[in-house]
Image (cartoon, rainbow, N blue to C red; front, side, top):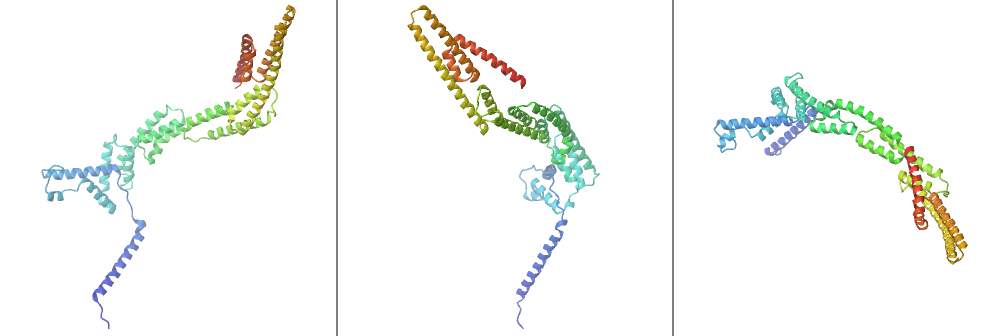
Length: 412
């Protein structure tokens, strides 16, 4: 029989026992894991109360030995003194987590409720709500402390409600009301679990205001007859509604898309190619399409290019006619200077007057066919017409343009 080393045997036995204990503890923890209650740490107000209590206890103890806080004292007395406030609160929290019954919760809740009620004008709604939430599952439902805390919380909620409702009565747009609600939550420190109570009445008011503003926006949209006007309605909607969602936003988008589709179809079907006839209707249409569809729209680019081509053709025709008349006037002027007989001079003067009248007729026709704001027309009119004729022609054209603009404004 072999000799057995007792030390080795003891070591193996100790190792086996330790392993069994570890397995037992692990299995026990796994079995009770779902049954362990994890209580949250106390809210800031309770922590502040515990710190003050710890500070008062330590100060009273030190004063009983005739010493002040922070003054030099015998180390044996300091060891007997209550812990410093920070350490005392930390130990309190550890004991709470280890055993929730270590603290007399009902007594503590009653004391905290009295302090909360006394500080009702200084403590915030978020802090009071945190205290209520902390104690509501730790003390009986009808406990006096909960009643006092709930009354204090209700009082703060009513103050926030009344302040918000008074402010909202002066507001007329959803964006302003939503901003007022957000400001109220920040100002009164409303916790998420109390927002419904504070904002309930204001949300009803918001719903009514949304309906009124939607009706006004729809009326504006019905009167909008161009994409700039629709864009102005969209800007007004964004200003009035802000983050508030509404079906009117989609209606505005649909109206703009339909207007763009109508204009693009009009570009394709209303105007024959190549352009013919007077230029001003094409020019006005080109400016309108550029404003409503944008200068980079491919169909608008094509239309403007065709309008430029037509303008160049009309300007070329004008130059040809004016060149002929200028040549005629030069010949008549030369012959008049060479004439000696009075009758011939009078005859040439009449022909020159007729030629000047023809020039004015050509300019008048160019103003109608090409437009009074065309640079070529205005330049040639300034060169070839007399000051009186020039003023008369453009004054008449200005009056016609003013009448057309008034009619267009009245129609819009």
